[in-house]
Image (cartoon, rainbow, N blue to C red):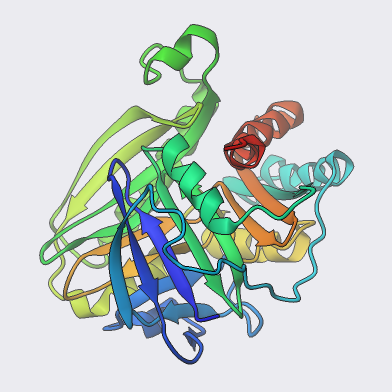
Length: 352
């Protein structure tokens, strides 16, 4: 089956289908190599020979109604041979102690701890049906389904913009802090939520990092926020950055600087990245990377790959993570990941 991606932008009533009609997607080892490139890009958290940056060539681009479930014809998910080691609560507890000790010692200001769980269904649910469910359930989110031989098949429903824009108007966001809406709160947008000091600090760390990145590329940017935004049954703190760029042909350089942000990695960036890749129980693979349409001459829409799952037949590998600070508590952080996993679990539980 040819490589394809289908995505729906937040609040839109249609999706965009991209097919590469022959050959495999181009592979890259650095975001900087994306300068001047056009296509649907799929970037892992850690780039390796087994997990390269993939660029699906847009040989065919089609606008389709979200309600059309069978626009790809035969819908068989592509699979890869990666070994998945889903984490248990015991594994999470070990990882938490290891990660948190680095914060207590002062080695890191923030670090993100992720985990993976497996869900199994008696019958394989067609990925396009899952994509359709996600679009119906989560109108505020970026929904994408990607299938290549190298990556396998991934579905994401994410609220976090990494980079989007066109011509001389661009934007990114700082998204951090998480609270679950319950009871009467579910009727609103989280207006009555009271944020803890930990959540406020976590969001400020990400916003400061974004500011420092943008200063390397432009002197014209504006920050608004933070404000509370809803994503499924969760709310986050979000600051919006709008800016101009002198040269859109070097978006890869900006992406190389931004990714991974402290929202999925930590600070200091290089040290926390190395610690995560060497110590986290379950490899993240394409979780907490980013994906979307890259088009320096047109419109670019790139989102961080959060609330996602890797689809392998009847087995679904679900990923979630959370930011740790020095005063983080293990049980609270575990419950935060459980709340985030509900985004994909809800899609799997619905029967249509």
